[in-house]
Each structure stands twice: as C-alpha cells, then as structure tokens.
Amino acid sequence: MTKPNHLKQHYLAITFCLVTSCLYAQEVTRIEVSGKLIGTDDAEGVTIFNTSSNKGTVADSQGYFILEVALNDVLEISALQYEAKTVSVNQEVISSKQLRLFLVDKVNALKEVLLLSSSLSGNLLADIDNVVAQKKMEMNFGNLSDLEFPEDEFTKVDNELVKQGQLNNGLNVASVFGLNKLINRPIKKRSLPVEEVKLEKVLAEKYTPEFFNNNFQIPLNQVEAFIRFVVLNGLTKNLLHNDQEFMFLEFLQKQSLEFKKQDDERN
Image (cartoon, rainbow, N blue to C red; front, side, top):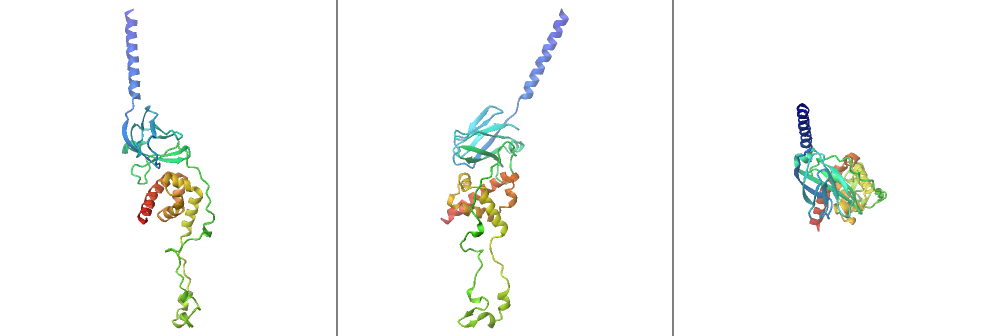
C-alpha cells in the first residue's frame, strides 16, 4: 500500500507544478501609457476600457487619460451619447508608451476610432483592422469651372492699353514701338493647376461641410476656403486613397489648426 500512496503523492506534486506553471504563463505584464483623445470638443467622460484586463479609465476635459496596457490588448472607447468601438494595442504603442485616439464624431454614433502617432508626425502607431472605414459622404458643389472667384495672384493681368491693334489717343502703341511680335505671343493664363482643381472637387464630393465642422471645427461658411487651403498646402491625390485614410485625417487635423490660426490673425 505504501508504493501506490507514494506514487499518488508524486502525481499530485506534478499536477500542482503544471497548474502553477500554467497560471504563471498566463500572467501578462502591462505598462502605463499616456493617452489623448483628438477630434472632439466633448472628451470629458469618454470611457477607455481595457477589455483584456477588465480595467478602465475616463478622459478628462482635455481628452487626456492614463491606462495600463499590454501588446494586443483590446480597448473599448465609449460614452453615453456614442456607440462603443474598439481598437487593438500594437508594439509601437508599447514602445512609445503613448496612445492617441482620433475620434470621428457622427450624430448619435461614434463611427470611427483611429489610432494616431504620439507626435502627430505622420507615422501611425497602429493599423486598426476592426475599425469601420469612413463611408463616402455624397456632396455636390456643382461644376467648379462654373464658379466665379474673385481676382487674386493667380488672375492674369489684362492691360487694356497694349492689346493688339488697339489705339491709345489715336496712336497704335504696338506698331510704333515694334511690340507686335511680343504682344501676339501666347500668354499663359495663371490659374490653379488642373490637378489642384480636381483635388478640390474630390474633397467637396467625398466629405460634407458637416464633416469638417464636426471633426475639425471649421465654420460651415469657411469649408470651401478650407478645402482650397489644404489643396494649396500639400494635399496630394495619394492621401485620398482608402489605405491612406489615417494619414489623410492626421493631415487635415494639422491643416485645420494652421487655417484657424491664420484666420484669427487676420481678424
């Protein structure tokens, strides 16, 4: 009888060691990261909950928060007035210890939560596969070529005194001074490049004025001017590709700050 009891004790010891090892292996080391909510004026009260650790926090009035996370943790972002959405933590978040969440607000629903780089330098911290992409929002400004714009630095100077064959007090200026060849030479019209006009049209058709107003606080009556501003300040057609949407929204965020700054200086 002694031998079976001895074996039983060994079995129990081995089982205990296995269970202890499994529990130890399941422990996850989490680090504290600094977070910031971007793209909303009403960040206070937004909850950031780590569903992997069952712990969460609430953003302050400026959108800042502190949360412990680990690689591949799933975070749920929600508020009373919004539908909850989730994002995943990747290695860059762990390395930088900073987490930036770009909230794209819609009426009564939080349609997107985009994970941005900590420095907003153009390098995204995460590729979020489980976030619904911004749906195309139809908007029609009509044919931009039919719109009338005030004269600016791109408008061709029209000198009425030196038109071909025109007399000034009975004197043909061009003929007297031998300027016919110069005057008859084709003059390039200084206007916006076709590519930039196309970019303006694409933006106007893809995003509504409310999109720029809600997410970047651009007044509705200045949306058209803002679209022109971003086109003239570095927007490229590559940023409008679906796989560049995170980068595009970050670009708009930067440009909106500069646009409003210049507008304040003018006023």
